[in-house]
Length: 205
View 1 (cartoon, helix red, strand yellow):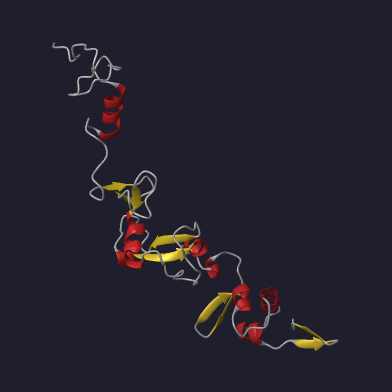
View 2: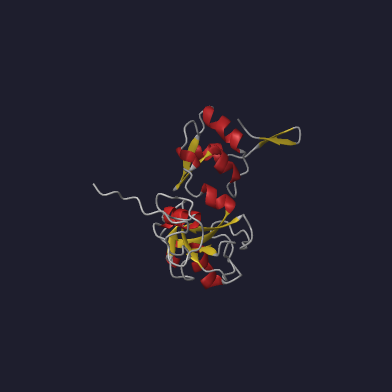
């Protein structure tokens, strides 16, 4: 049986490498040994700028473009951010859900993948969101949670608290809930006028 152990040399076996051998079994210096561990080969691990897409451990795609305004210290930039920068430059539009101002250097600004696929960086799949809207974008509607008092008027169904914040409604959410517990219809619980006692307006319960 032939041994696979390479003849020992004091220098790394890679051409033009003068570094001393650190891993005798393979006659490799430390640099080339760990480079192969990282990349699978002995060549440079740095790809030409913008030529190689690299998957990020969170599912995003990065490009190596050292001179890009959004590049990290490593010279890499997230592809989805680059796509939006190509469209809008330094002036991002406001959050597409709430209208809050956006800017590239803010932790409160996100480039969101509409279909939740972080590798789909087509411009039609990207939008600008503020942090609050980005966090809540996939949250269930309030009416779908358990133990919520839900009321329907016309085509609109919301919780008592949401109705209390709705334009044109003067009754607070907790009063709407109390009215429903007293047996009032959805419409009356929301829109029945307040009654006045001692010059103070109190919701009719």
